Image (cartoon, rainbow, N blue to C red; front, top):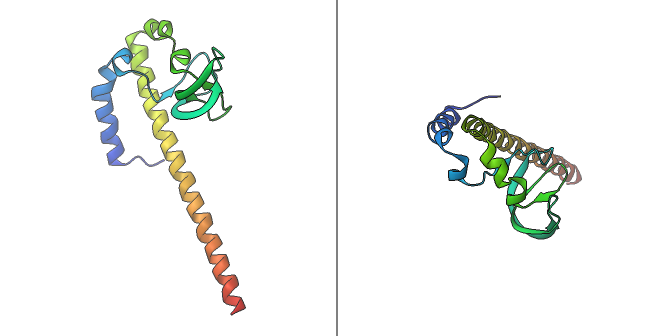
Length: 136
């Protein structure tokens, strides 16, 4: 995997600022690893009704969801206040750092998927053009 100079600068800026902040001060992260669920969950805003996998009550609007198993969670349920307060500062810094890296890797994966789709469309367009060319 190639890491550009831009990404190195972003990572350095991240470490200089966010690694010195408390999780409570930053609020809820966009990507969460929790002991309550085996998969990484991503923050999303969605108004499809669903039930929180922890408390079983209705869950819509801003919530966390798992791409792998499609379960949804209230932000407050997946990151209980007790668990957030129990984390020591070093753990918080490590968690924030790894969440940033995971977000970066997810973005790279999404970019690769987009490029693959573009390539498939290009090949399909070429095949259609060849097919039409043989007709005329």
